[in-house]
Image (cartoon, rainbow, N blue to C red; front, side):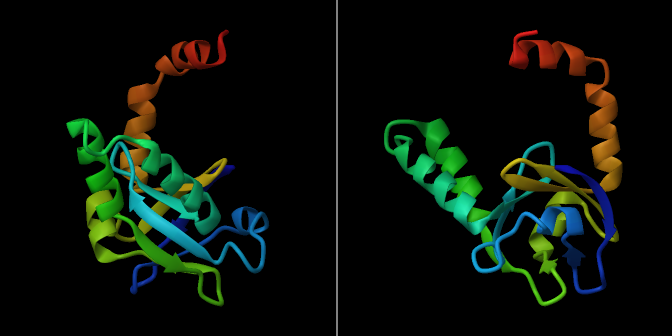
Length: 144
């Protein structure tokens, strides 16, 4: 969990924050799957979490629903496997950086089983747009 601002190096790599990597197991979580997220962010899933996502996607009726087909096609066509290097950096594909409009700076959000990667300006715009709705949304979701 948490919010972290990190620079990308010239090769498009971003470092995984220490507080996020302390939750990784040495042998299982060096591989991440990146895909297109929502509100123009990127989603990073540890490989074992991605396996659970894949199993859930397999439960959707691909044949019967045009919406299911559209979502599955988009979500999976944007999926790429990334491996942490020895300095805990992920090399973000150019296609993904362009989609999220990330060039030099990024915001990483630790969100339970995934990480979101944002352009800092877009993330601040999203926060401003959500603004006062936070309390309303919290009430709906948490039954407050």
